[in-house]
Image 1 (tube, rainbow, N blue to C red):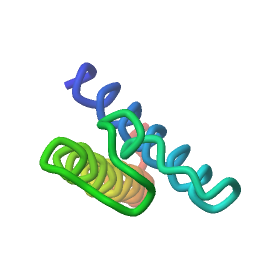
Image 2: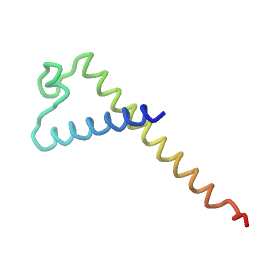
Image 3: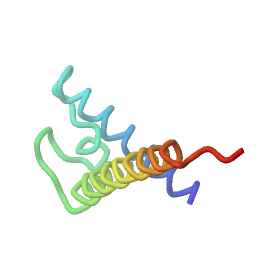
Image 4: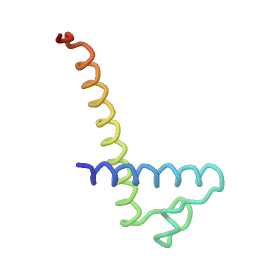
Length: 80
């Protein structure tokens, strides 16, 4: 599971950096890597964008699950 967490985090970072470049410099790194112009896509870039989106959903689900487990742990009566 740790490898999946690392891969998801890396993809979310790549996506965040790409969106930052789009906002600041009007430069789409993913499109550039795959030989496309700004704002255009091909199958490879769409796969990367899809993986970034799935990684974000996975990260959100992980955070919510962790939050829930902490809440349950804190709500459990203390044993002495």
